[in-house]
Amino acid sequence: LNIAKTLSLFSFTSPAVKRLLGWKQGDEEEKWAEKAVDSLVKKLKKKKGAMEELERALSCPGQPSKCVTIPRSLDGRLQVSHRKGLPHVIYCRVWRWPDLQSHHELKPLECCEFPFGSKQKEVCINPYHYRRNCSVQSVILFLSPSTLKAEQIARYIPDRCFPN
Image (cartoon, rainbow, N blue to C red):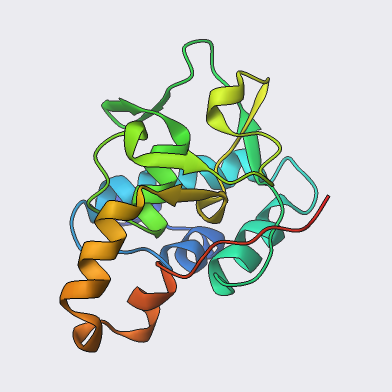
């Protein structure tokens, strides 16, 4: 009985993490995505309004949103579990493009004040402040627009940010 209680403590997922995972795209690597989001929530809770802004961006993908930033590490990468990756790629993979392979597939939008490539102390992880190279999106929409669900189509809506 005590072992079961101890194990359940380690498997507890906070309500904030559960909410953010509700917008997760794709099925694979569920536990890894949960750890990535949990790590992010811990960072964002230290910043006033950051969690709310991320939830707003995820829930209204066609609407303008502000930067959601985390501190940049020395090498620019973030370690989640046993894997290291670039933070904007990790969270774009979790919430927009599960098949995303590399940062070379992403371009920041002009309105993003803290894009990954700018080498600032903070880096924006708002998945709607990055766009994917158009060639991939165009092929997907051209080949099967009738088979895409509304939430899938939202991933390909032109991105907009708040004007400065």
